[in-house]
Every structure is written in C-alpha cells, then in structure tokens.
Amino acid sequence: YGSAANQLNGPSGFALVQAADGSVVAYLVVDYNNHRVQRCAPAEGGACTAVAGGHGSGSAANQLNNPTGVELVQAADGSVVAYLVVDWSNHRVQRCAPAEGGACTTVAGGHGWGSAANQFNQPRGVALEQAADGSIVAYLVADNQNHRVQRCAPAEGDACTTVAGGNGDGSAANQLSYPGGVALEQAAD
Image (cartoon, rainbow, N blue to C red; front, side, top):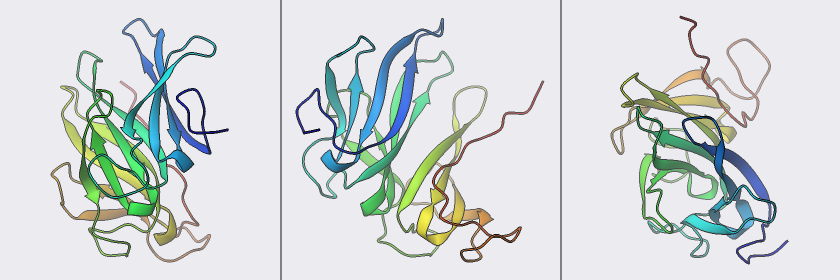
C-alpha cells in the first residue's frame, strides 16, 4: 500500500468505464486514505492517474476527505461526462470533470454533517437516475449514519427527500441500518 500512482491505501469503491461495445476502457478506484479517485488502465499493472482529489485531505473543490464511492455520469451515446464521488468525511456528493485532476462541484449535501434535508452524515454510496436522453433526473445517496436513502434533485444545493429508512437504526420495514450502497432497478420493457 502507499500513495504512488500505482499504489492504493484503503480502496473503498469501484466503477468500470466501458466502450460502446462493452469492452473495459479503464477502472475507477476510490482510494479512501489517499483522498482521491484513480483512473487505471485495464492492463495488468496499468498506470493510474488521479481524476478527483489527490491534493490531500480537505474540502476545497480539488480535494476529497475519505471518499467511499464513485458513479459515472454518461451522455446518451455512452461517453463519460463526469464522475459522482461520495465524499464521506465532507458529508457531500461531488460532481467531478472526467479530466485528470478536474475540479469538482458539490451537487448534494455539503452543509456540514446532520440530518436536515440538505445534509448527510457520512454518506457511503450514490446511484444516478437518468432519463433516456441522458439528462439527470436525481441522485440517490446512501446516508449511512442517518440510516436512510436520500433522493436529491440535480440542481446544486437542492434539498433531498427520504425514499427509504430515515426512522432510526433498525430492522423494521421503514428502517435501515447503516446503508452502504444504493442501486436502481431498471423497469423491463
């Protein structure tokens, strides 16, 4: 383990970047203790570059603090237009340009830790709800310490609504216990 370009320290999330034919173009690896997301070539021992964070722990636009998840934002043609990064210790979700070291913008949370509609308490995962034309409908965020899943509008700083849990830690039908991820089930045609 370490912090060099070919090393990781606490990988905590993963996503595939694929070509239109389904072949793997790159791997995205969330590097928790190095406060970055690495884009790695698919070849064994492939070189990696930081595409989000990598500038030490912090809350600036080019910094992350213990990221835990990543999701691709893709256009209708499948091209990657951004990465969504769950920034655990900053209690936010960042939208980051796909270029190396690209700046990020807060799209959900980022108002300190808490349980208000515009706050998270150590979010762990994110999923993207997109329309057929590629436009973003909402972000779904696993809000770990608040024991809920939040659905957030795509406009920066908008409040979120609870779509699962939010009634304390537990196993009842209306409760979750430290959700660590979220996924969307697509309707069958």
